[in-house]
Length: 443
Image (cartoon, rainbow, N blue to C red):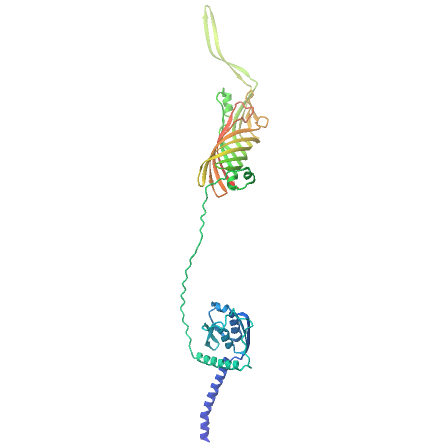
């Protein structure tokens, strides 16, 4: 009895060991073996089919996603087949095969497809029936081959070594536009129809609108022979040179060739210092002063001669001094014609002649009237000219800012041809020299 117990104690651990190995083998077989499934794909991209097989049956697939073969359409139907078998048949028809073991499979190109995916009939499916002995034997042999291949591949280690060298040559073609300001081109009107209706007109060279600012230095010109005494000299010195003269205006200009014709409308303001004094006396008497005495003896008589000076001494005298700023405002219109004598790339020089007519808008001033004593009187519409006319000569330059705009600067000489005050003791004409700056817009 003791010997039998000793033998059983040695066999019992061996039995437990083999039972443990058998349990591990059965567990691994159960994990790697999947039940047959039914699968169908109709006009579905191969890439989508692979994603379904991987998601539904737990297959880990590795393949080149940039291969266009995976965009081909799949028409396939299978009944009671293993997922790996379904995968191999589908890839075989698209020129690929599977390498690997277990759930990790690598898809590579390597077999010839039975029929291109784009030429197969959607109804042409691979169906297997158990009633057909030939198909059953073939499937059985294929199962045995797949099992053998799986066992052999399970014992292999796959090394994938690949060196990708990408050589790319890029040729870039581009078009470069150089924006250069073209020289001024002016289209002359060729007919009345083109001039009226604007057909084939270079717009920004034909018409233009502008604004300008003018400042002038002015004085009065007095003809010779009018200053005949101290009183007239005092009247002459009443008003002198003035720089407080400004003007703003709008310009409409028509361009054709090197000639331009323009009209203007604006407001001008003149300010001049008025300095004058008047003396008023009332009552008085004559004061006689003896300057010297001469006597002459004729026989027995002595004759005395007295040299005297008589001065009128007023009882009351009053002096009024005027020292104020005379201000005149005018509404001014004008027409002018200019000629370009130098035309550069971005600048041109021109001369211009114009005629101006002005009418007063406001008169806040004093003047000297041509009556006895030359008294001072306020300026109003009765003693001021209703229209004042002048001519001008100009030298100017235009500088191009853009395709549709210029700035210009002009030096202008202006001479008025009629009097401002109607009842002034001295006949005088105003003249001046000014600088005009402006902006011109072509349309």
